[in-house]
Amino acid sequence: MDGLAVAITAVAFYIAWNIGSNDSANAMGTAVGSGILSFRQATLTIAIFVLLGAYLKGYKVMKTVGEGIVPKGSLTMEMALIALLSAGIWVTIATVKGLPVSTTQAIVGGVIGVGLAMNVPVNFFTLGKIAAAWVVSPVLSGILAMVLYKFYSKVISGIKSVSTIE
Image 1 (cartoon, rainbow, N blue to C red):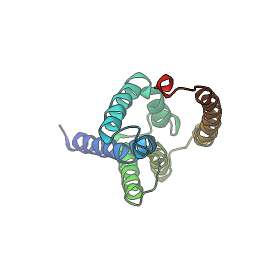
Image 2: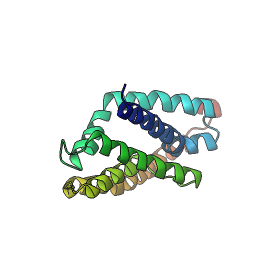
Image 3: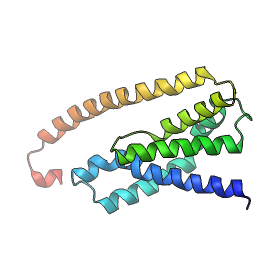
Image 4: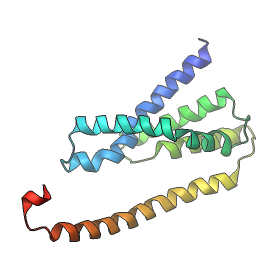
């Protein structure tokens, strides 16, 4: 295995560690903090569903980030390594500071930065769609949480026996 392959593999594990230390904590922090799940249960749940998500539909996000932000074929392995390393360093800093950042957003920023540094054209239409998803996603999630809470609070308040709820 040549040096570049070793470096990319090491950075891939570093990014995976960042996802575990920051993104997974964002997803499971509420469940663990409220006592619904133990740390071990949350870790197992994240492991299962991260692997399933990556295997079943992860290629769509990889295609958008890898080929949609900069033209296909213009992102070399060295450029990808620098983009991932810069994203990993930023997410590590944010995690140490307790900031709930997104590894995906950091990687998108790294790809844009490398593209601009190498004078590769950036597809701002695709970048706009990605940024719109970052804005729309929490808004829609908040609306859905409100609707579900109102629905389930009515259902639960109508149940008179604790054993029925259990």
